Amino acid sequence: MSVPLPSALGPLLLECQAAFTRPSFESFVVLVTGWIACLGRHTIARVLQAAGPAGRRKHHAAFYRFLARARWVPDRLSELLVRLLLPLLPPEILVIVDDTLCHKSGPQLFGAGMHVDIPRSRYAGRRVAFSFGHDWVVLALWIPRPWAPSRGWAVPVLWRLYRPKRRCPPAAYRKRTDLAAELLGVVLEWLPAGRRVHLVSDAEYACRTVLRALPAHVDFTGPIVPDAALYAPPAPRRGPGRPRRKGRRLRTPTALAADGRTPWQAVTADLYGRVVPLLIKTQVAWWYTVTGVRPVRVIVTRDPAGRWRDRAYVTTATAAAVPAILSTFARRWSLEAAFRDAKQHLGLEDPQNGWWRRRAGRRRPLRRAGPHPRGRRGEPAVLRTVPLIWTVYALVLRWYLHAGQPTADVAAVRQAAPWYRHKHTPAFTDMLASARRAVWTARLSTHPVLARLYRKIPDLLPPWLLVA
Image 1 (cartoon, rainbow, N blue to C red):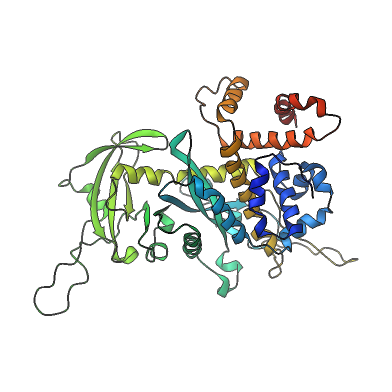
Image 2: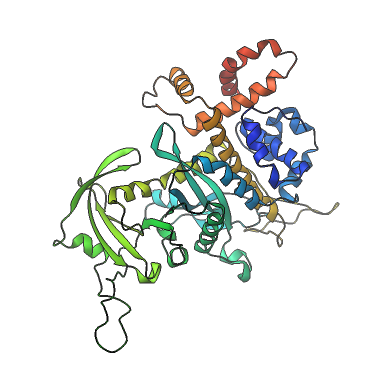
């Protein structure tokens, strides 16, 4: 099937061909192209409309079957994405794990349930807010920016759907931490041997399930509970009897911060694109309940200006400098930015993935509150749509790093919006707009009537896209 593609995006799509059969790969190309070109709400129907003539060469039901019945495995596609991203990764590979809630609605939805909505809970004060939808545990690889190596993007490459305990059979229930440990084990098999890996996550995944079985070449950095039970190494054996398994009890992170005998040290760290002054206290200890016999370094930070509360972190990279550890942990926020970009600009929450079918001549029964998934119907479509969207996100980023023009894109944005004086580097919206222009240019350049206007198309496309 002939689909007009940008010259640089075509080879990237061909790298993903091994995950599909030939008919499925044709559907994959159409959906990826339509997802990039689509404006507004990203439902499957709108994506097919944005795909242009290629979206009409098959019956529209074929693309729904691609998500619901076709023989392709998202993990195989993830493995191919990791291969595409390997040349961009730093010497020490940074892996970020977190979860995100995709808001959904409707009773006929597999795997959906009520989950704690962290952003809404923060704005609500002490009240805990709940929202209905899909909760995805995501593993991402961090890629440095060529024009600013200290900053970068988090590109999700592996995903697992967390199902609430009340909404799935007991044998199928798995905690988010179990899913995170599984994702880490899978991606470690795909990464090249001999490369060190650094895992970063929030407090939920700084637990025994994830950290106890970490290989020796994998380090971890994340928050630590304020009352963690920390110990010194066991003293050498003296005389007969059973040797001690634990050393003396050390101060908890809270006690370390309050202890006036240990002075605060002034350091500066590159956090979130700024050089921030901090006061720190550190100690090396053994956190037996979580990391076993692997030593860790506990870091307590304090804001010299007193605007932020004290925070405590733990890392297994005991020999690394404290400012470097804090800068590494700050890169976890890039995954939150990826969640925002995917939801706002790629419609991560838009596809319905619901289903409804009744026999002819029968009326639709009254709906009751809560989901009614009827077993496992709709499961393949739910488990494949989100990986497809994240694949589009990774392909756009990978394409832009190869064929994008950051300087020209930033200049065009500042010319169209001169009030953005602080803008010096392209954002994901600029990358997506550049990929969208490339798709439309390739499509319009093949039109016989518009062949003479080919050179003017890139200049005319931005206002056209804004109007659309």
